[in-house]
Length: 255
Ligand code: ADP
Image (cartoon, rainbow, N blue to C red; front, side, top):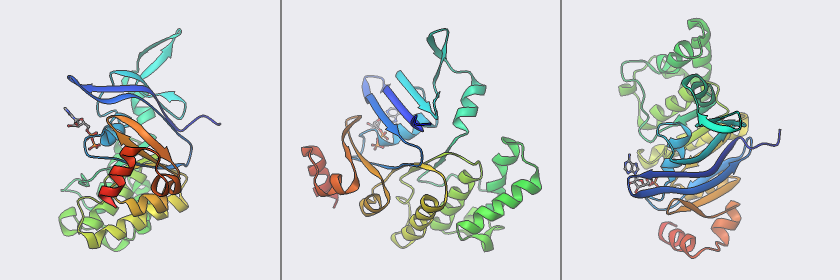
């Protein structure tokens, strides 16, 4: 049971001539909370997109809970995974995006019920009970019948978190989830993430510009530069005593 929950093994991703991830190696333990920071264009979002299999990698293997996400071992060699395998492995991962991506024509409750019914095969009453419970958990029990347009940005983002959790993921990915919010709405979303970290059995990987939150919340912080991890460590070490010149430059520009 000591295998990592997520493993990037020599993962390379290129767009044409541009190498965005360069032989990336990254292990994330079960229930570990990892923040990814770094300058724009350093490959942070690409790491999450590869885990969601939103795009193919060019080389290497990504493992989730001991299973290869992109390729499977068959008679000693790696072959591309089939769709059924991919859906099953990917089903363990939930993602929350910067721009919420809620279904606009569905209420908060319906947004949280759709995939559990259509993908997990839950009955409507089961999915509704679970959705209502999760909306309560993110503080939106009273708004469950509201449509996205009737909700603030912070509330939409909390619905998006409840919707991802409704699929019972083991890993949650957060991609700059507070970047599109007015400053006064950031706190309510971070509070929900804190609550998830404390109460749920979840491995969490977040790309964030909220250095204060990364410092307080993470077990480990990875500083990305040029598609590689230039430096990683505990928040105290990375923010308090960075060893890499690039980390120092980045932190002095953003802190
Ligand atoms: P970050 O999240 O650190 O800002 P990204 O992972 O979004 O960086 O992007 C890394 C690099 O990959 C950037 O130079 C970006 O322009 C490039 N990139 C991302 N997506 C694409 C794409 N679909 N096609 C071409 N280039 C891309």
